[in-house]
Length: 416
Ligand SMILES: Cc1ncc(COP(=O)(O)O)c(C=O)c1O
Image 1 (cartoon, rainbow, N blue to C red):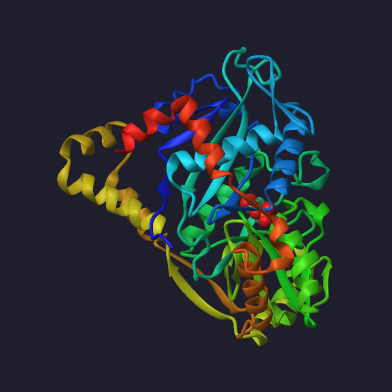
Image 2: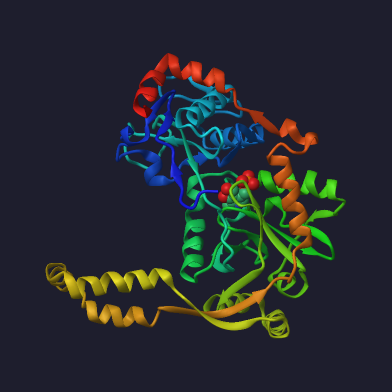
């Protein structure tokens, strides 16, 4: 596993492999303004791509919902279209061009490009497709999850369940919040206050020995890993799995384990949850007095402990202002002219340097999580014969040949 992400030097863009730093995106690209993208996150494990068919189905479905194609095709700027087989070959070519056959994360993205008036009507802008590949370090750290103030999108919004860029706006805010509390993933609730998901993974909670997960129609992304665990792994392990509304109270007072599942996260234990005082207060207000009291008691009776955690984002901001004060008189003068007193700003930031809240332990051991994680590992790495049909074998020879015909000679020359 790498410590730092490795970016693929080459991308596939509208039919051709090109150097990533040679792609100039126009500033009037419609999707840049309005978030009208659909994308996927897919894993290649040693030249085998896990559940590629399902990922492409979700991508094409999203493109269809956003009028960028149908369930079977995605439009091209030249009036043609791409099929799922075209995108499969494109993914294979991108992986081979980057020398990432041993493993990588694959990100196809469909978006509305440049060319129409900048207005909100996106339909005139050409549909474009790109594929980026990267090698990622471990996605979810061992730091606590952080309860978010942001809720998942109302499922009645019409695009809930589609992996659309715009739907990630609050996910990124929630992730920032988690990082600001020195945590890992945010735990977001749905519009009714039940557990929903993280910014990049679904949640599973072990209650009475059963694997429980929020319903698919609550605004969450219908995850492919979620499906894998619920419909295949749990069955194989003889563990009952079911969908249900799970409250924060259930998680804190009844759950014996909880874990995240996702293509990037794989299966990652959620052992601790941090709730800031502000978020806890707002959540209790949304509950009404009886349930708020119940939750409060559960926190007190459980092993919740008050804690102040460093806010690394504020820490960095303070460093920046101090650097300006100490070493950059010109910048300091410009800041003052812009109406800011850096010393006052630092004093204000000092008060936000730490975040106070309660840290709760969700279970102490994770036997179910561990069994699920091992089964998922075996399945994705091709060690479980029953599921080799879930793995799309990359046709390396064909990809190399295709690359050779177009840009391959250039790629090889560059690499030499
Ligand atoms: C918001 C969100 N939920 C859940 C998931 C898990 O989905 P999958 O298992 O299909 O990767 C992801 C994956 O990226 C996600 O972004």
